[in-house]
Image 1: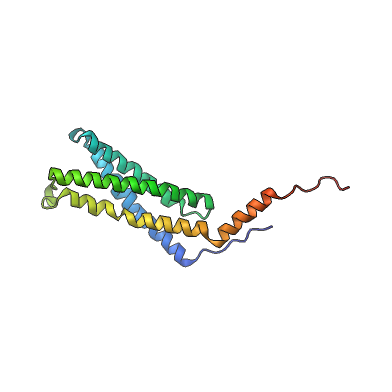
Image 2: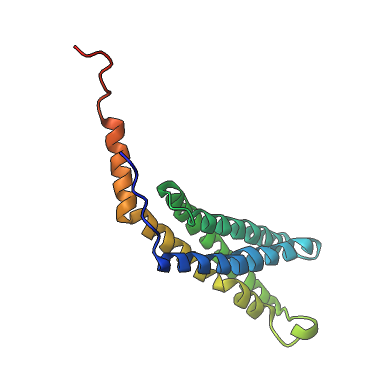
Length: 171
Protein backbone atom coordinates (compact mmCIF):
# COMPACT_ATOMS: atom_id res chain seq x y z
CA UNK A 1 0.00 0.00 0.00
CA UNK A 2 1.42 3.38 -0.98
CA UNK A 3 1.60 6.20 1.49
CA UNK A 4 -0.48 9.20 0.67
CA UNK A 5 1.52 12.33 1.29
CA UNK A 6 -0.65 15.27 2.04
CA UNK A 7 0.55 18.73 1.36
CA UNK A 8 1.16 20.89 4.40
CA UNK A 9 -1.28 23.75 4.82
CA UNK A 10 0.08 27.30 4.38
CA UNK A 11 -0.92 28.28 7.92
CA UNK A 12 1.20 25.45 9.33
CA UNK A 13 4.15 26.53 7.20
CA UNK A 14 3.75 30.11 8.42
CA UNK A 15 3.53 28.90 12.03
CA UNK A 16 6.72 26.88 11.60
CA UNK A 17 8.56 29.87 10.09
CA UNK A 18 7.40 32.05 12.97
CA UNK A 19 8.54 29.34 15.39
CA UNK A 20 12.01 29.26 13.82
CA UNK A 21 12.37 33.02 14.13
CA UNK A 22 11.07 33.20 17.69
CA UNK A 23 13.20 30.23 18.76
CA UNK A 24 16.32 31.82 17.31
CA UNK A 25 15.69 35.00 19.30
CA UNK A 26 14.33 33.87 22.65
CA UNK A 27 15.28 30.36 23.80
CA UNK A 28 18.43 30.18 21.72
CA UNK A 29 19.85 33.68 21.92
CA UNK A 30 18.32 35.46 24.92
CA UNK A 31 18.03 32.56 27.37
CA UNK A 32 21.25 30.79 26.52
CA UNK A 33 23.31 33.98 26.25
CA UNK A 34 21.95 35.20 29.58
CA UNK A 35 23.04 31.90 31.12
CA UNK A 36 26.45 32.07 29.47
CA UNK A 37 26.87 35.65 30.69
CA UNK A 38 26.09 34.59 34.25
CA UNK A 39 28.44 31.61 33.99
CA UNK A 40 31.26 33.78 32.63
CA UNK A 41 31.06 35.95 35.76
CA UNK A 42 30.49 33.00 38.11
CA UNK A 43 33.39 33.92 40.40
CA UNK A 44 31.62 37.15 41.40
CA UNK A 45 28.28 35.41 42.02
CA UNK A 46 27.40 32.72 44.51
CA UNK A 47 26.65 29.12 43.67
CA UNK A 48 22.88 29.83 43.56
CA UNK A 49 23.26 32.39 40.75
CA UNK A 50 25.81 30.23 38.94
CA UNK A 51 23.30 27.36 39.03
CA UNK A 52 20.71 29.73 37.53
CA UNK A 53 23.08 30.45 34.65
CA UNK A 54 23.60 26.74 33.98
CA UNK A 55 19.84 26.14 34.18
CA UNK A 56 19.23 28.89 31.61
CA UNK A 57 21.73 27.34 29.20
CA UNK A 58 20.27 23.85 29.60
CA UNK A 59 16.63 24.96 29.36
CA UNK A 60 17.36 27.19 26.35
CA UNK A 61 19.10 24.32 24.56
CA UNK A 62 16.26 21.93 25.41
CA UNK A 63 13.57 24.35 24.19
CA UNK A 64 15.52 24.93 20.97
CA UNK A 65 15.77 21.16 20.48
CA UNK A 66 12.04 20.76 21.09
CA UNK A 67 11.25 23.47 18.54
CA UNK A 68 13.47 21.80 15.94
CA UNK A 69 11.88 18.39 16.58
CA UNK A 70 8.36 19.71 16.03
CA UNK A 71 9.29 20.94 12.55
CA UNK A 72 9.19 17.34 11.32
CA UNK A 73 5.90 15.61 10.62
CA UNK A 74 6.73 12.28 12.25
CA UNK A 75 4.59 11.29 15.23
CA UNK A 76 7.52 10.27 17.41
CA UNK A 77 9.40 13.52 16.96
CA UNK A 78 6.27 15.54 17.75
CA UNK A 79 5.62 13.53 20.90
CA UNK A 80 9.28 13.87 21.92
CA UNK A 81 9.08 17.59 21.22
CA UNK A 82 6.19 18.02 23.65
CA UNK A 83 7.92 15.87 26.28
CA UNK A 84 11.12 17.95 26.06
CA UNK A 85 9.43 21.36 25.87
CA UNK A 86 7.34 21.06 29.04
CA UNK A 87 10.11 20.48 31.62
CA UNK A 88 12.49 22.83 29.79
CA UNK A 89 9.96 25.66 30.00
CA UNK A 90 9.26 24.88 33.65
CA UNK A 91 12.98 25.00 34.46
CA UNK A 92 13.38 28.27 32.56
CA UNK A 93 10.48 30.01 34.31
CA UNK A 94 11.47 28.68 37.75
CA UNK A 95 15.02 29.88 37.21
CA UNK A 96 13.78 33.26 35.99
CA UNK A 97 11.68 33.62 39.13
CA UNK A 98 14.64 32.76 41.38
CA UNK A 99 16.99 35.12 39.56
CA UNK A 100 14.52 38.00 39.47
CA UNK A 101 13.68 37.66 43.17
CA UNK A 102 17.39 37.62 44.03
CA UNK A 103 18.09 40.64 41.81
CA UNK A 104 15.22 42.59 43.39
CA UNK A 105 16.24 41.72 46.95
CA UNK A 106 19.87 42.65 46.22
CA UNK A 107 18.85 45.86 44.43
CA UNK A 108 20.87 45.16 41.28
CA UNK A 109 20.91 48.03 38.80
CA UNK A 110 22.23 48.10 35.24
CA UNK A 111 25.54 49.68 34.20
CA UNK A 112 26.39 52.12 31.44
CA UNK A 113 23.45 52.96 29.20
CA UNK A 114 21.26 50.64 31.32
CA UNK A 115 22.09 52.44 34.59
CA UNK A 116 18.51 53.54 35.32
CA UNK A 117 16.99 50.11 34.69
CA UNK A 118 16.72 47.46 37.41
CA UNK A 119 18.41 44.21 36.36
CA UNK A 120 15.30 42.23 37.37
CA UNK A 121 13.28 44.09 34.74
CA UNK A 122 15.90 43.40 32.08
CA UNK A 123 15.81 39.67 32.89
CA UNK A 124 12.01 39.67 32.71
CA UNK A 125 11.97 41.49 29.35
CA UNK A 126 14.59 39.21 27.82
CA UNK A 127 13.51 35.80 29.07
CA UNK A 128 9.75 35.88 29.72
CA UNK A 129 8.87 36.04 25.98
CA UNK A 130 10.14 32.43 25.78
CA UNK A 131 6.49 31.60 26.41
CA UNK A 132 5.67 32.41 22.75
CA UNK A 133 7.92 29.79 21.10
CA UNK A 134 7.01 27.33 23.86
CA UNK A 135 3.28 27.65 23.17
CA UNK A 136 3.88 27.55 19.42
CA UNK A 137 6.00 24.40 19.80
CA UNK A 138 3.29 22.67 21.80
CA UNK A 139 0.57 23.76 19.40
CA UNK A 140 2.39 22.67 16.24
CA UNK A 141 3.50 19.36 17.76
CA UNK A 142 0.00 18.61 19.09
CA UNK A 143 -1.69 19.46 15.79
CA UNK A 144 0.71 17.26 13.86
CA UNK A 145 0.57 14.41 16.39
CA UNK A 146 -3.21 14.34 16.66
CA UNK A 147 -3.95 15.10 13.01
CA UNK A 148 -6.09 12.64 11.12
CA UNK A 149 -3.34 11.60 8.70
CA UNK A 150 -0.85 10.91 11.51
CA UNK A 151 -3.40 8.89 13.48
CA UNK A 152 -4.31 6.95 10.35
CA UNK A 153 -0.65 6.23 9.66
CA UNK A 154 -0.19 4.89 13.21
CA UNK A 155 -3.28 2.67 12.83
CA UNK A 156 -2.02 1.27 9.51
CA UNK A 157 1.40 0.56 10.98
CA UNK A 158 -0.18 -1.26 13.91
CA UNK A 159 -2.34 -3.34 11.54
CA UNK A 160 0.69 -4.24 9.43
CA UNK A 161 2.53 -5.48 12.53
CA UNK A 162 -0.35 -7.64 13.69
CA UNK A 163 -1.26 -8.99 10.23
CA UNK A 164 -0.56 -12.67 9.60
CA UNK A 165 2.56 -13.51 7.64
CA UNK A 166 2.07 -14.46 3.98
CA UNK A 167 2.22 -18.16 3.15
CA UNK A 168 5.51 -19.33 1.74
CA UNK A 169 4.31 -22.61 0.23
CA UNK A 170 0.95 -22.98 -1.43
CA UNK A 171 -0.84 -26.13 -0.35
